[in-house]
Image (cartoon, one colour):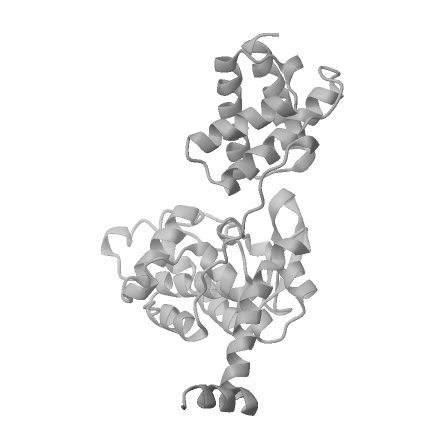
Length: 320
């Protein structure tokens, strides 16, 4: 088999992944990109599919390290290659899966940065909600923070997925997995206020140029633009940066920050880890456990601040 053999194998593998795992377009693009880099390395190294073994995978990861890829990125590439290796075994091109024998050095997980509840309030307060677009933006922010939605889940939300009466939203997450997430009072009020004036985004009441061109297009997406299309990931990111522009301390904020805040603030308030896992849509609780580190930090701060012996100890340390 030549490089063309890798072409056919990877194409078949990606097709199977799309069907069997139901990955989103974004995930499939990332997956295809990782395998494309590996294919180029195989071509340059003269590695045939039948020659894939643990040594080859290790050499590839070392090549990534030489190019400056962080351990976390190498780990992601290895995860992509595991599926391809299993495909080679299934097609009897190689006898044994080499991936389990490949080990990467452990690395500390970077704790996500979060905002304080008061920072969230300031971010919400920065939105001018006097018109329909402002109401939409406030509802998006309240939903992202109040329900812990991924940005793709937020902009992909359809009207039939929202039940204001029940105070819940049905979300289709990674791998098209369905979950129900409760909505808090603030999110319900913000979304209801927006939906009551949603049509004004398509037909602004004071737009003289469009007065005689009323748009009657039916759009199923909850959050829409003035062109009658669903809000995009890029559009939400740009809007978020605009809301944060008034406070230089928030310049680093991203859409995923709101999801981190959702999980962290729930755990700091005493929420059960399993419940938070369910609401976030994490298939593995180890993914959710990263937030317990943030929660423990909060508990230590509370203990130092309010426990009588802790405060006395601190005072004693400050005296001679």
